[in-house]
Image 1 (cartoon, rainbow, N blue to C red):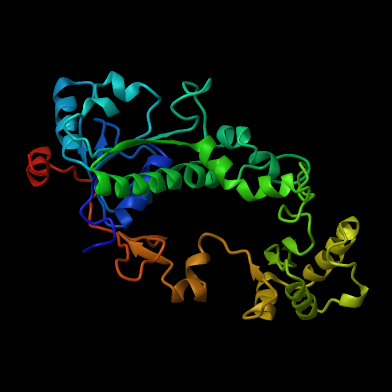
Image 2: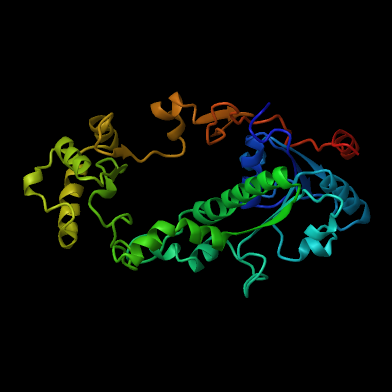
Length: 361
């Protein structure tokens, strides 16, 4: 058995961002995923190798043609799941909506959108930044002067793709128990709001301000922020607990007796300035050596190129090389049925007849 989802067959309608991410996550865990690509639409991002498309093959079908729709219907009729990221109603107009497969009552139909299948904005265009803006998350991220988008990690992949994969995994369990499939309506706005549960709780409890760079976890606290080093690198400090903050100050060579009390918010600017001046005296790698192996919760901010080479990441094989490309390994790790990247060409399409025969029809 290859991964905990081995035996599941999923059809993915090619898209960008959260849909291929969800498909990658499911394929990494053993599901057999086949992507439907439109003619002439290969490599949507202009990449020769797209990590998000790893571990699965594809078929080229024109879903606007009768022949293409018929082939897609035959595939989905034999699948356990479908992933699509079109605007609401688009799959229905193609005759490939959730209600168009009565012969497959176990089908888990995964729908990925920014705004969801319903609501005033459901038919409106958007991207990660707009979805997380209306979820309340973007407002909380960045310096006091303006919000800063956290790449497209929070919306597309955190609030979107992972919630779609999780929702489909839940629906697969239900289908296995009852024989009933269902629609998974995964909206980035919903998922991002869900990710903000702890912050919402802190706000409700009066310990989170609606201002940026004014709270425990947004860079305001001297013990939870990044500091510039002498060489232009950065040190990330996350010494929230008092004992870790004390260890940080000790190793940094800062006199704790002369520092403001850790939770004296009124004096956080003063404490930040004191720590910043000290960290600026040495290089990033000097400080990395000072704090290595300690409970000071201080580590270097690594670049994308450096991260795979860090001893901890190397020891855990957090990254691997596939097709000559360094990329993250499947996650999380399962003790009995660990995920792995299946063989699947990103350049040669599968033959639809052979695929249908293998899938039983």
